[in-house]
Amino acid sequence: MKVLIISLNYAPEVTGVGKYSAELAEWLALQGHTIRVITASPYYPEWRIKAGYNALTYSTEQINDVSVIRVPFWCPKRPSGLKRVLHLMSFAVFASPAALWQIAWRPHAVWLVEPPLFASPVALFAARVASASCWLHVQDYEVDAAFRLGILKGHVARKLALRVERWLMSRADVVSTPSAAMTRLAVQKGVSSEKAFTFPNWVDTQHAHPNSTDNPYRAQLTIGHGALVVLYSGNLGLKQGLEIIVDAAKLLTWRADIMFLICGAGPAKDVLLEKARDVPNVKFLGLQPKERFNELLSLADIHVLPQLAGAADLVMPSKLGPMLSSSRPVIATANEGTELWSVINSVGVAVEPGSFTALSHAILRLADDPSLRERLGTLGRQYAASNFSKETILLQFEARLRSSVLGKRDLGDRATT
Image (cartoon, rainbow, N blue to C red; front, side):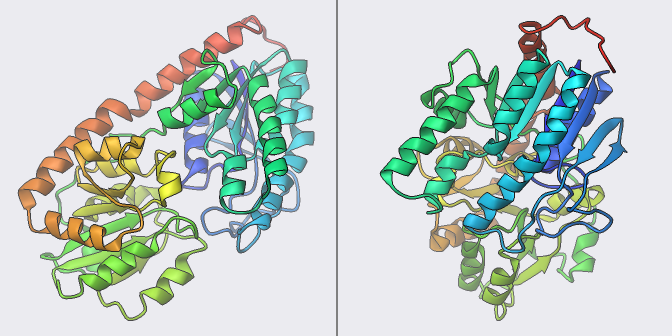
C-alpha cells in the first residue's frame, strides 16, 4: 500500500504525537508499504524549532525509509488560547498544497492526525480524487478543547462548530481514537459504529522493561541509593495540573528518603521551577534522548500521572503504557468511573484530580510498603503487555487499514510509485 500521513508532529520529536506518528510510519515501511509524511519542523515539547530546521520553508528528507515533507508553520513561544488555534491553522494552510501535490502519486490511504481538524477538508478532497481511503485519527477533540479552555464561547458558536466537526468526521472512511471513551464520543458526534475504531497508543515492551541494575541517573542527579524516587516524565504543559506534584513534595519535605523528579520540557517548566524554588526534595531534568528512556523509567520507585479532571474523564494518557511496562507502580489522578480510573484502580493507585493531599497520602502508602509496590508493578507490567503491545496493536491497525482501502481501490494498483 501507498500511505500518505498528514501529522503536525513527527520525528525527531521523541514524545507525544510525533513519537507515535513516526513509529507507525516506520513500522508500516518495514512491512513493505510505501510511506510519505507531510509534517512540520520538529518543535515539541519545547515549542522551539529544533536546530537545523526551518519553519519558514518547504523541505524534504528521508528518515528510515520514509519520505518526509516539511511544510512552513507558525510556532508560538507560549501556546495559549488563540495562539494555539492560529498555530494549528497555519500548519493546515501550508500542508494543503503539499497534500494536493500528492494526488498524482495516488496513495491508497490518506491518514490524518487531529489536531489539526483544520486539515480535514484537504485530506478528504485528496483522498476522494485519488480514490483513496481517508482515515481520521483523533488524538484530541479540538472543538471540545476550544470551548473548555474558553477560546470559543457562546451557544451559537458552539452549535456551529460542532456541526462542522460532525460533518467532517462523518465524511472520513475510518475515525479512530486512542481510547474506548473517545471512540464512544466519536459515535455520539455522528460517526457510525462501523467506521469507529479504537487505536490505542502502544508501548514497546521490549524497550520499556524492568531494570534492577545500578541506575546511572542516581549518580548524575546525586540521589542516594536509599532514596525513593517519585518520577513524572513527559510534556510540561500549562493545562495538565502538574503543580500538585510540587505541592505534594512540600507536604513531604519531612521525609528525607523521598525525592521527586520532574523530567521533560514545555511551557509550564518555568512556572514549576519557580514554584519549587525553595522545595529541597524536588529536582528537574530536561527532556532525555530515547536511548536513555528505559534507564529513566527504571529510576522511578513510583510514577505519578497528574491529569486535570476534564481531561482525565476522556483521554487515556500515552505516558501510562511505558510507566506500567517499567514494573513500577503508578499513581494517577482520575475520577471514579472514567476509563483511566478503571485501569489504574486495578493495577495502581487512583486519587482525586487536583488533590495534592490525596497524592501525598498515596505516595506515603507506597513508600512504606515495598511489597505493595512490587505487586502493583508486576500487575502493571502484565497489563501493559496484554493491552498496549506495539506489535499486536499495529497488526490490528494494518488489517483495518487494508480493509478500508479494499473498499476503495484494488491494492494491485501500482500507479506512479
